[in-house]
Length: 160
Image (cartoon, rainbow, N blue to C red; front, side, top):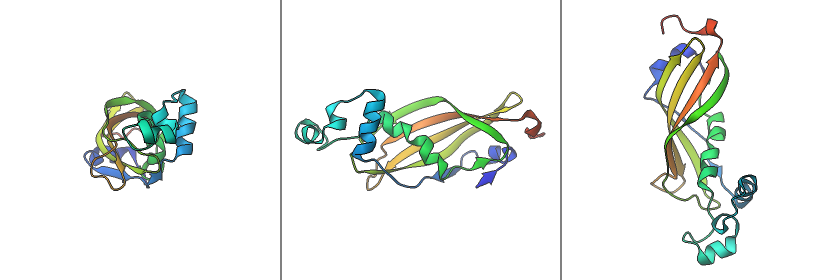
């Protein structure tokens, strides 16, 4: 779906996307461990994690779950017609509520909390993000994700 900059203020308070399910497998976890140099056994050693860990096996890094958010946006969040680029600005209130066990499926829900124009060419958006675990009533992660949508100043809506 493609929307216009002028549509964004009217979408505040709406859930804009639920992503497809993604499987978090051991290969993904191991690659993330290599990239971040975080090889704690509860992530990368299935045998030891099953024997000594509190979760019955390996789990994804919390930051891996957070890092999956951009992939979750690609198949659901609307594209803004006038945008030239979208950049991360940061997160507020990131909470890791349940571990993501290896082999679990996760998906993201994105509710638009705020969309405000800053300067001539930036739209600041804040999404309330929930990463759900399949077959669980409690989410794996919640956060407020702030992004900056850059656009050409000539495309800024006149009445906003």
